[in-house]
Image 1 (cartoon, rainbow, N blue to C red):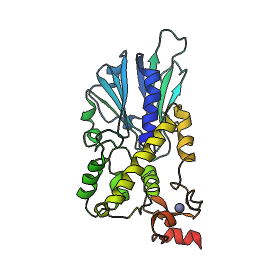
Image 2 (image 1 turned 30 degrees about the vertical axis):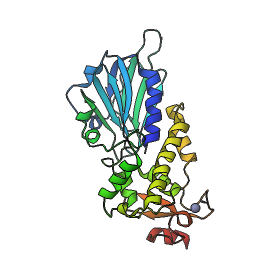
Image 3 (image 1 turned 180 degrees about the vertical axis):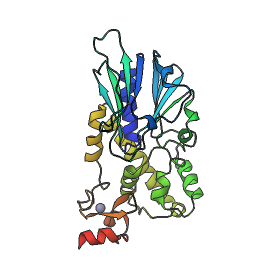
Image 4 (image 1 turned 180 degrees about the horizontal axis):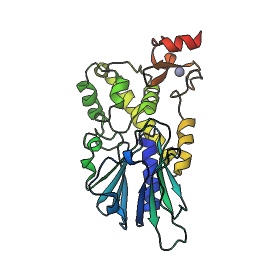
Length: 293
Ligand SMILES: [Zn+2]
């Protein structure tokens, strides 16, 4: 799932490709992905793109005051194409294409475009067309952006204290508490902070708070730096090759050489290093103990 650094990189990439150009049409092929009906998608036809912004994990294309907002969910992605077919895309169950945004550029012979795709059968991709991005409930509810200037140590302290004894891993993933962090980067930040994912949010002492704050800003900031300038097609590989523990169950912790362990839940799992994060004591997980036998 794309998180803050990948969406930020997509936004930067799209800004360079879209701003100042006009949208000639939008083909919607996965009808259930469109969550709004007013204004209609046709309102975009012929509009000039003024800007591309990010709100948490949401991508926001501002086309002359009409905002096309996209949430890529688990398996959504964006692909720039230098040339798209002249014939409008049609719904096709076998094709991951959910929507195509066709760009009108009189200087070019071919029409370039943006394909919004979603792989798999569990559909979560969401597209909104609104006059103000805050009309999207998920955006209106967003907590502070962890890379913004006002996300200070004090801000993090207030957030964690107000979440009581909830596990820190879950708190970091709640978009209404902190915007943009998902399963992968919460694993990575906690590993960098050498902190157990199950640590209660309000139990951090002053030194731990500072360590977590530095890990949070550092991990996300470095990921944004590495990703910026990369094309959408390069981002997934870039993310994967730089993860220390997330998605690396059974592999070696790059910091201490211990094996990366996992705790599995009904529809997700977390990864961590026991030596780095839990004083060498593995967290309980039935499936993991089977794997290690
Ligand atoms: Zn380790």
